[in-house]
Length: 299
Image 1 (spheres, one colour):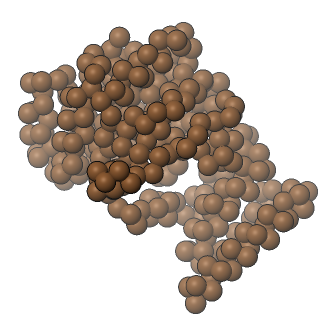
Image 2: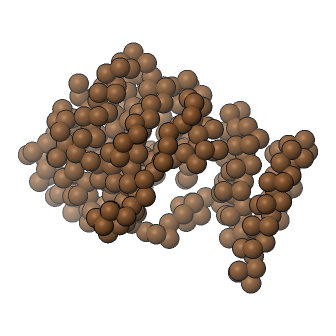
Image 3: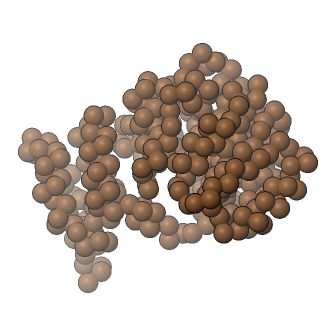
């Protein structure tokens, strides 16, 4: 069994060595590494680093001449991979040494089914991880195979470097290249729509490294209009409860930062309808009081 490891890079030469060293340390050694670079400014440095590893492992670089986004580069990786299993890895994250071995064993039981395997990771800065104070995410796996409810209602997390798919899944799934944000979630939603199995491994198999503590949905390209469009895009699989949770946990907080909170109220009413608003009125009062507290702190 061959595993294809897809790493997307953008100005990553200062930290990708740790990521590649973790691949070298894997207990499962039948793999290829595809580095898809998104028009980095440090491409010459990255190329030198990759050349040093090419004598030890099967690794190649595919260079983009113009900047796109992570979805585009991941899709390029999928198209150029030859492994029976595809594992995605962000250039700043670090796998545990048994990651590939565990994933390969899980997929042995699902050879003829479209399947996604994901697992727990330890999230934090590199200093946090080294000090053993990172946060385990997710704390639990999905209660059912309804991955939409898991991500929207159950505080579920499926991060890129924990995602592995088999070739049958790769034949029907791609990352949505139109999205500046929610790319991982959309990938999982699309998998759910295509009846792909989700298998959760309750084991920490990677370190999710945070380079910038200030990074959030807003700084990564999400705004009110994007969030509303994303809800409409996925309305066929989103329940009213899913939308209410998204409004309170994501959209309303972004709206406050954009000073557009009151603009989102009538739009939210239109999305949910009066019956749902009546059903959730206690929740919305709670959210509204939370928003007012944020406003008071800012004033």
